[in-house]
Length: 239
Image (cartoon, rainbow, N blue to C red; front, top):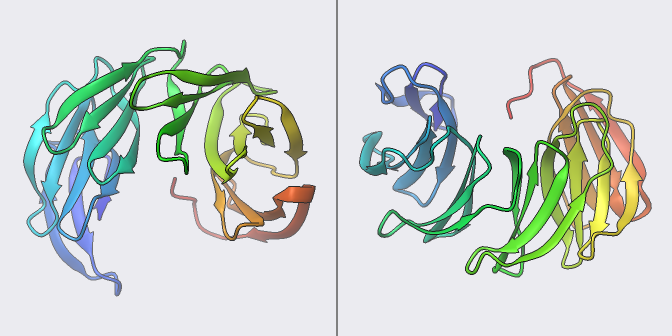
């Protein structure tokens, strides 16, 4: 499923053949799409969220003003629970069965740019535009960690991922990746990216991969901060 900046929505098969297409969002750009199961997906358009049918590319139910500002990030916590973060400072937790908000997290002072759902199934990590990394429980809103990432440039936490039950990795606007423990202590720094990092994630339990907007892909052994491989690809990175 692909959503474009003009509100178009397209469903492709693995052979890149178009199965269905529609002008879903009336010229408003899609910001996020998340597949829920074989029949449904969630989309955010401006400040709204839409629960959609995959086969017909139609909205089943939606919340027109889910946030006061446009939605920047979506994350699926579990099959029944969605997290949305806006260009304001709010994150909201949603019950997908009722499409109602169950909690608002208001501890950020800048727009949230990155989210990672943690493996304990009770917590999420969020990073904002002034370099703060926060860990909080999505059921209660209780914050268990707040630390400022060492940053350069504009200070954004651009990407997050969990490495283990006790470690998080986050990429900032200085093109570095930092590894933190759950007490907020910086464990290591991974350097070598030449462009702004768009995504980070685990390839295996030991290998972390970063993808940058200058088409550079780096693989790391994160435990000893060792760079394994660098790939430069000749296409634009899709975030």
